[in-house]
Length: 77
Picture 1 (cartoon, rainbow, N blue to C red):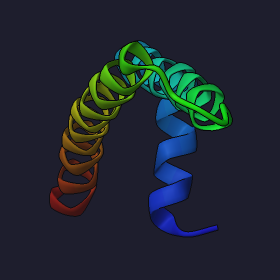
Picture 2: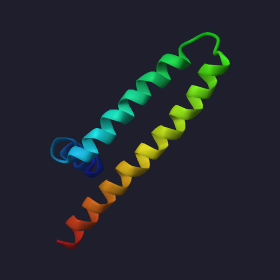
Picture 3: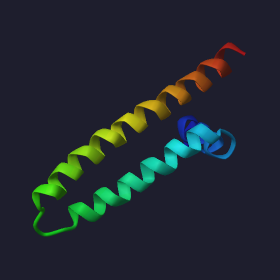
Picture 4: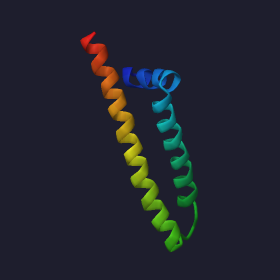
């Protein structure tokens, strides 16, 4: 397991905001998989797929910012 993965696991256990973002990201990932498994996407499915992808990226950026802050605090400590 990489240091990044270890830090992520630690934050899932100890940081409520990171855990909320992580769980929300997982929910969107599951929903996206459900949509992508359909043989034919409706226009609503396509719109939802794009919305979910954008939201997942936002969540990932927020998680990365938290990870970066924790990494930097460990280096400077």
